[in-house]
Image (cartoon, rainbow, N blue to C red; front, side, top):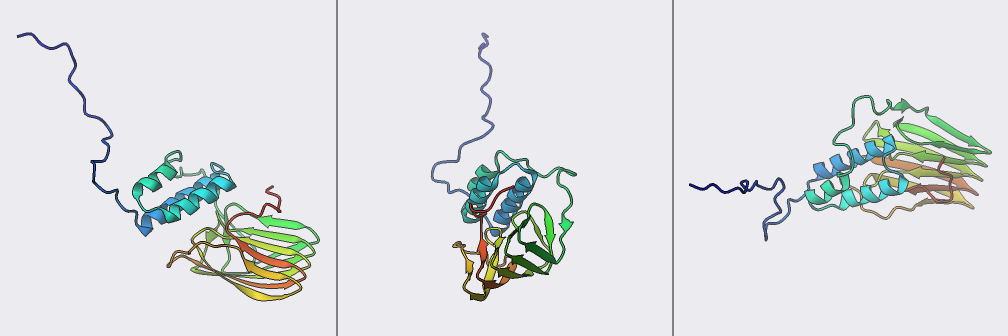
Length: 207
């Protein structure tokens, strides 16, 4: 019997979804896991500020697993041991005296802390930081200066305080996750400002 010279057809490695079959919905746990992967990539320098902010916002709004997979496709499957430096414990007092000071990257946020900007500016970037408690309280004083607190998207925030010739304001507009950690920002601004944002202000240097 004559045998065909054509090799047998191999099955495709990735089958497209069958028509009419809905995509699998993403759970809150899967969205949280995706955000943690993005935070690790941000801390490693794989994502810049704009990419991290955009992908995190998209992950929190993702409705299917496919959307999450697309966000993580060009990132490592897991953080390799030793890739990230251990998070450092930050002091409870941060003071910007007639100058600028910033705390960014991987660091452990105390349960309660005080940040003072005296004729200067202070930036607290929590996006790649470790929140050590379910509730974190940041007391912020801006005396003719500016305090900016940058929080991860999805985190619950309570920002309130008093001002004299200044402002205490929360610039975020997204909906938080119901069981996410809570960050309380208690501000006092005297001819200055205490601001809460989900991304770094363009007015502050990124260095």
